[in-house]
Length: 145
Image 1 (spheres, rainbow, N blue to C red):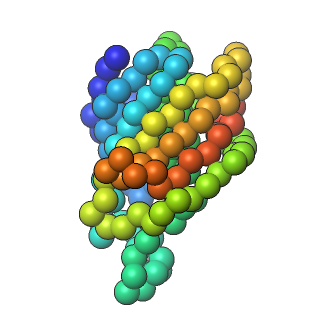
Image 2: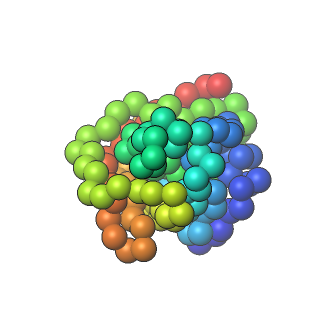
């Protein structure tokens, strides 16, 4: 198991503000499982429009955060990862259980279900203080940059 700070996350995946949606990795078992944290602040660029006066994090961005955590996991033990990208290729069984608000801290747990040379199927779960907020199965492909 290992932990990663923001700088190390940005060394693995190309996402940057305002689209980098994970802040820290608190647990990682290569090729198996990752647990990441997203601190949701009122300064997020989507809140002024989603929704004015009643800010709620868009569910699709919670799923994207899961996919980014999965990409960090998939690139963990690839020696030439600077020449690779992980594309989000599909989603199944997505469910949104409760809203996420400014001030929440999302815990993203992503586990590998099936791993092949260039494709992967993962299951992601997002919770806030132990309460399930979203879940989905995510498919990804490893491609040349």
